Image (cartoon, rainbow, N blue to C red; front, side, top):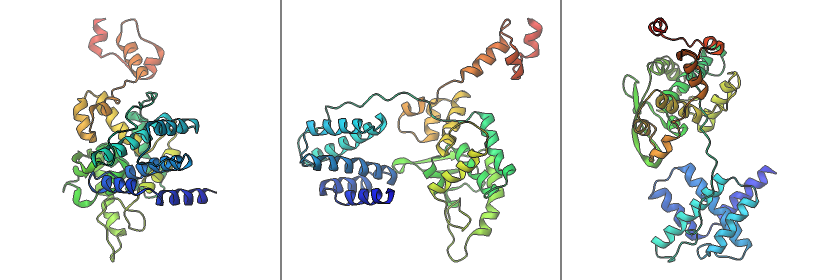
Length: 330
């Protein structure tokens, strides 16, 4: 059944109106939109095409009433607010492009507002949890330990997106492995840094990588699979999932969570949010500001240990103690 559904989706997308295909071509060739993002636009617009066909409406000439009906239909089918907003964004982009190209003079999606999305914190690991995850390749002895440790530390210490670490090549790396140039969203280039621990892990991994490279078709990709080919996005997700499953950490651990952890640790350590924005490659500061959250339990423990009347057994159990000079003064 799943195969039939995928075949149906491919067939629907292959029958896209010429104006939408022209728009998607513009996004890929002129705007240099990432392949994954382009696929999301295609999917959203394919859903809208299907809706218009069922309501005898031509997509390029659709009215605001048709767009509103489509958004309501998505909600009725159980689409999340995030998915509905993304579909609305896809249509806004399409109709603005039609206006820019002179194909129509109004934007039927312009009167619609985004749905309110519940504010949720990104999944991340605290420093101790991150240390446990990093240590797993050495102790679990599964998959390819040296590669996996280097992979985890490279994502975490560089704050890399999964697509960025997959595309990373040896030519992108500094000679001492302490940093690299990466190409992020929108083909924006930035420089990232790697911790001493990550550098050491890379130094231990690279000789094994060289040994596994096929002589006839060597690749410059930094991270490879056991067959000597560049590792894929699903491959990275699968590797992280294997270690997450045996970590004993009751959190949703995935590659993006490592990037979230990088940002969270920097912000909580007092790093300026705008610096973190540059390191992450975010276009908007508002995207970075969501990392400025605080672990309230940790604050409570610090308070309990530092305040003259705040000492508790739980705080002492966590190892929070006042500096000796403060205890002497009290």
